Image 1 (cartoon, rainbow, N blue to C red):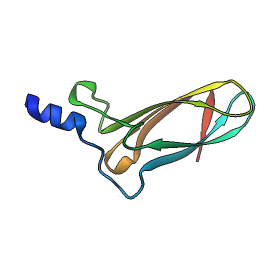
Image 2 (cartoon, rainbow, N blue to C red):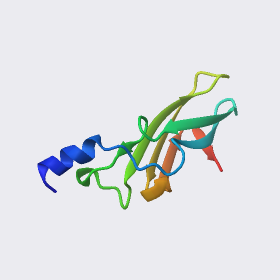
Image 3 (cartoon, helix red, strand yellow):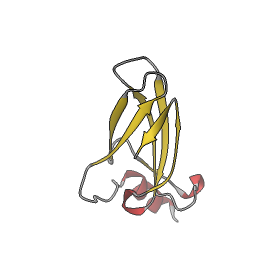
Image 4 (cartoon, one colour):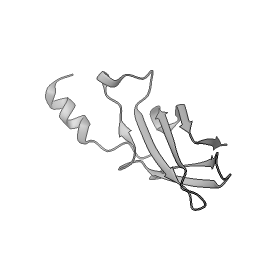
Length: 98
């Protein structure tokens, strides 16, 4: 991939799949609060590049989540494939709710 194509891809917004947000729920390990998280496809989620290979992942989200009931920070890392389908996810300080 040439330099100009790399620059072009760097500034390209993710393809729109109908919604501007990825929405998921987490539960805090400390207080049990259920938190709904909305991540913007254009500002929160990053594109994965060739030098950062992670399987078939095209997008990546690293999110710090803080609820209203306690000061426990929840850290979530999610890798997405085409169409923002989840390939892998990891969480610290909480659990993903389906």
